[in-house]
Image 1 (cartoon, rainbow, N blue to C red):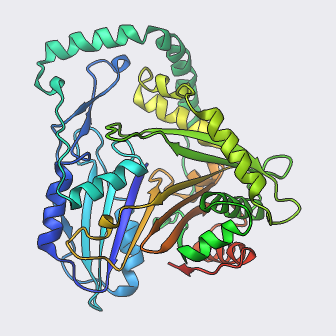
Image 2: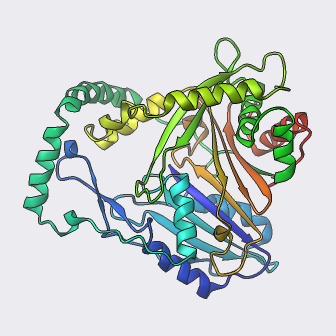
Image 3: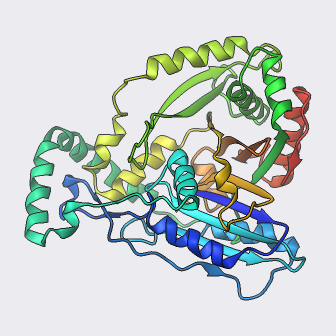
Length: 410
């Protein structure tokens, strides 16, 4: 899983400014990587001994019509969470004088809020002073510490052993040859941008908030494509940031889940949904980490990845995430303002129709506000009603029209 930001310019990128930004990212909260534990049960550790890639520059300007393809290719670029590079910065010029920059980062080293903070801090030249004592330890000291950490997780290991056996059986059962795939397949994704005053007005006049409206739109898309439970309700999962001021955690997230019933049509009154979400948020405060989190440090990584895929294979759950209003500094990574910025999650493992279908399809909606605009990114695939960008575009337009909204799509 990765997070991608894309800046588009109606001018060439200032390479000196972008180079400074690239260097500043290395001194910020993206300046760390994961170091593998000497024994799996101990859990991996953070390290400031990270490898960083250079700014990747296309050799020649690309046709403007191929920019979307270039952006998609950057979203599929390889990342190395262990050791690095765990993020990549790339820039291209277009043959019409425009240009674009892509920043792709592993979700392991930053969630959405941390990713945005890292960008704004790099623009401001703020360093993060990452220092890990274990970077100076010799192998014997690391081994000793890992044995001690593994002992602390003894209770989790009992669960992990059973799950490891189950997952090993699952892996053997998963060994099969994929059908011939389109090598150019990528998950359909559309960015829809609406003037912020109109988005907020549409929510407010219906008794909701910007987030409530995003959830209603997500539920409407899910209902139209049949991504619902046995009762025909859209099941929504919403990540919730638990990040505090000066928080150094890479991922500081909890989540809430609930059902939205649109069998009788769109929600004209968002107040009940807003109240339900508020109740869920209150109940989630202070809850312990999900059981999968402690298991992650005990299971071998490949087996844990299989477990996560199995849990995530659900044809009824859709995700809606709101980053809120982002720091204006994020638009100025080369020193001057970009024409637009786009942010979104990239699930690099969903690399074929077969994989997406086996995992129950996908619907992920993320929202952020910047420079007076609300941008909603929708990633979705749910055969047979949603299999390409054209269908997704039409769905978004139709659902937004129900709330008297129209969007610039891209």
